[in-house]
Amino acid sequence: MPVLTFRVRIYPMTPADVRHRFRGVFGFPVTPFHKDLSLDLDALARNVDEMSRHPFCAMVAAGGTGEMYSLTVPEILDVIRVAVEAAAGRMPVVAGVGFNAALGAEIARGAERAGASCLLALPPYYSNAPEEGLFHYYEAIGRASNLPLIVYSRDWAVFSPQMVARLANRLPSLVGWKDGQGDARKYQRIMSYVGDRLAWFGGIGDDCVPAYFAIGVQAYTSSISNIAPRLSLQLAEAGLTRNFAELDGLMHRYVHPLYAIRDRMRGYEVAVMKTAMEILGIPAGPVRPPLVNCLEQHVEQIRKLMEVYREVMEERESGESAERSQAGAGRRSR
Image (cartoon, rainbow, N blue to C red; front, side, top):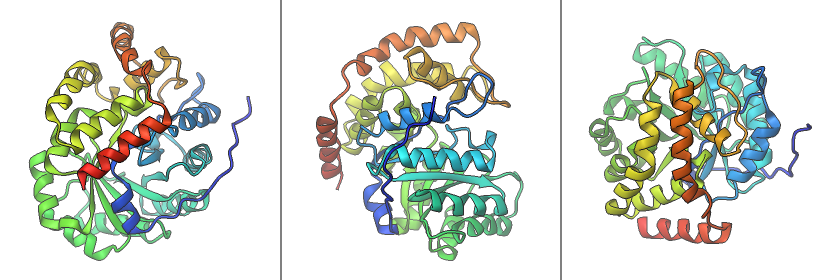
């Protein structure tokens, strides 16, 4: 089946645009594969097209949930290109970059040519880099294109408040910070120390939404956006408006049961989401090694949970009402 084609409208963004537009939820599509583990770009186009009907602040292509580190550089650029085409100007596309300084810069240049609006830098391959080497890595990526840069602080990319401030001073294109450590106490100290020089995002998972919005992030990246866009938008709206009673109810019914399954095995984060998508009739396919697909007993647990999720699947808001809901959340958060 040929890949779907769309009219592409480039979505240029300045640093100020990132700070003001990126509020609420980043859609975070998986990268679908065929059974032979080749890219399924047609499924990706269809999924991004459907997700783009909801008022996410942006779409992230080839991020962590998108299995960036299992892709080749040409595959990453194909994923970014198809995501930009499928989003069709309805929202900016943030492109994942990583590996090392040279490959990261190559991906950054290719992402800019493909029409991405912003870069999301994942940690480098080396887990024990000294501060200066780590800074050179981000500088090489940030200076390779004209796109704004968001750093994703996850795994071994651990920063102190002073390190974040030093990197921001050295790299003018750095406009946002995405936390992947899950330490709300430390993240709040970083945010307080650096202030509004950067936009602050939550990134370790939907299960951290209450903590993230309690300390003042303006948006979060949602893997649940793949299966229940309306739910991810509800989570963000409740967080932005500090409606923690509603947020607690959503977390209890939908988020905590899903993440309990994701915690059953290391690296299960993407496999569980892909299994849930397939159960709901959304093409996703298997994961690539070193990730593993869900065990059968866990597939049955996900199947039962997706019956609960159909409550928020079958009552999806129309594009107009969802936009009004998100706009209201944005006004109340200012």
